[in-house]
Length: 68
Image (cartoon, rainbow, N blue to C red; front, side):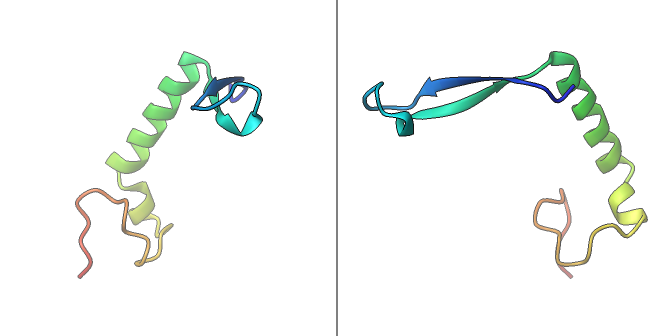
């Protein structure tokens, strides 16, 4: 499911210079949906906090979490 087609897209500049391109990954729609479901389960059910998988300093991307 994690296989993707990589398509180079021109950012700016000349088309002959490889540095002017950025890679875009075209992935399967089903894998994107499954990823969203898994992430939702992990965050909604507080799996990370309940199982102590994150230390206290890893809070910057946790929604609604404030440092005490």
